[in-house]
Image (cartoon, rainbow, N blue to C red; front, side, top):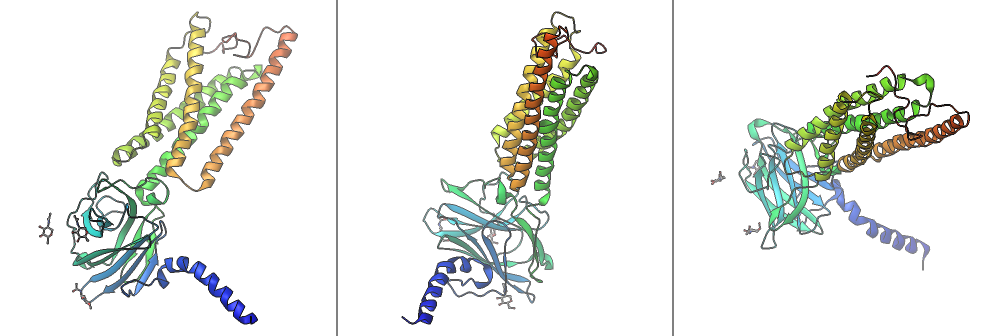
Length: 393
Ligand SMILES: *[C@@H]1O[C@H](CO)[C@@H](O)[C@H](O)[C@H]1NC(C)=O
Ligand SMILES: *[C@@H]1O[C@H](CO)[C@@H](O)[C@H](O)[C@H]1NC(C)=O
Ligand SMILES: *[C@@H]1O[C@H](CO)[C@@H](O)[C@H](O)[C@H]1NC(C)=O
């Protein structure tokens, strides 16, 4: 066979292998009905695309929204939000396979987060609307009469699963929480609010506050209490450091906890049950610790040993739950992998320090035992109250 023919065959084979993915980007897409649109954009999250033609003469826009990679049990939606950036208030076009098995499009005015995407009229006219399903791509065709001469809007887009004939809540992690942005039908400009919107920002703030307080400061406070005591010169400084560390962790942690509760109530229908329950448990344990400090018996009181056992048990349980819940939260937020790596790094750093300090503490304890010193670091010899600072009540 001629060499150039081989090359031609090979390259057409390669091209046919890659053409499905080429066909997925917006500029080269051929609609089955040979519909043509003047402008298109690859939306920045979820495999979705918006094509449109804007008619300045009558302020209408003909559009096609394509959402790839969905099966027949999915719903997809695209919406303009006239007043806000998020989902609440969004004027939504929904497409799904209805009970007759046909791809069906309808409108839904989403007034709250607990929507079931029931059919309702939008605040502007939609003279034509239809859906088409080809090769795992759902397409919504629509003509919108843009309200009050505006051409620039917030847009949101989503997908989820239909179950028992009704659309279920979409995923609340990853790109499904980032799929918002703006579109200007006249200029063709689009922007991503970076999965932003105020909700995402608040989720990030919640994450940072709690990862720093419950997830980092509290373990540091415990390490201070357990290992600084062994240095006689650090007595009673360790105690004040411990109290300062834990009370700042508690104050920041309660702020973070409150932002979590608010997030939970603002997004009813979103269930992060485990994360929420651990969070509430942590708040109770943390508060118990603060009150326990006020009820602490004097160091030579006969109940002091029991108090110490209680204080450590609650403390260690709280720290373990805190770390577990930071990871739960990271899974929900699914930020870039670097955040998870950074937090794993912090935990490994604290953990390895604790291991080294534990070994060092035992070394000192055994050495003191040999030289007959009567002062043992707290906890290492079972005489748990021996080095509690004199100054403290
Ligand atoms: C708007 O105007 C365009 C042409 O300018 C026309 O093709 C289209 O049908 C009009 N749409 C409506 C809804 O009147
Ligand atoms: C299902 O969708 C098709 C296509 O949009 C529509 O003609 C039909 O009325 C719908 N049936 C139901 C029960 O919603
Ligand atoms: C929706 O709009 C149509 C046409 O304008 C109207 O006939 C219908 O009553 C409206 N439905 C509701 C629930 O307002």
